[in-house]
Amino acid sequence: MAERVIFHVDANSAFLSWTAVYRLKVLGETVDLREIPSVIAGDKESRHSIILAKSGPAKKYGIQTGEPLFQALEKCPDLVVIPPDYELYVEASRHFVEMLRQFSPKVEQYSIDEAFLSIELVFDYRQWGEALVKKIGMWTGMPVSIGMAPTRTLAKAAVWFAKKWKGYNKVCIIENEEQREKALKSLPIEEVWGIGWRGKSKCDYYGIKNAFGFTYKSGSWVR
Image 1 (cartoon, rainbow, N blue to C red):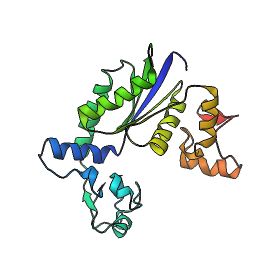
Image 2 (image 1 turned 90 degrees about the vertical axis):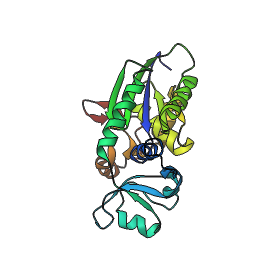
Image 3 (image 1 turned 30 degrees about the vertical axis):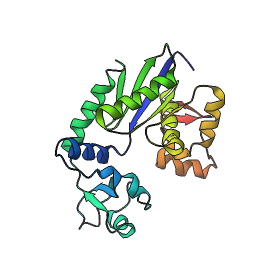
Image 4 (image 1 turned 135 degrees about the vertical axis):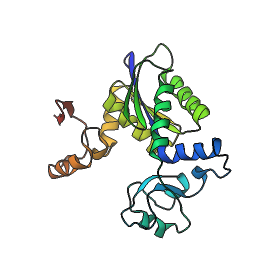
């Protein structure tokens, strides 16, 4: 691994996690939304409402982020539906990033629930990453996944594997050429940063199934 390591910190089911923590710690509620089938979504009466975030128990019913709420309710009629609170999310996101700056002055917020940290490591980076996950959980009650690699693209790939293979509150490291090759061959093409679902159709047309052998230059992936 290069001396400079990029950490991609991704808050898992951020909207639902932030809502759950707020209700427990501020409102004094006793039911943890993360432990029951629950989702963040809009009006239950609207067929256009979609799932913005889901709990682990909701996921077991096959409920997916982005699917219509009425379909989710068909899968789980007792699903608890919580309306979004964007003011809460913006405030929680601000605190999330401020907390990350306590670990590194080089923080780049990527989205409301994702950020990159650039770390000059002088000790065990795996141990450092696992400690960061635990501290975030202790301070906020929020589960996160962390991907570590020499570049942002690989760090985002690593966080996908951290979630897919290892689960929440886990880290995944891509630190050498062998791991990079394995990751880019295994990562679904639509999950590669800069390609997404729009780029997937073009990749499918040309028979491209993974990003191994590609380089990201000037806003596009080239061989």
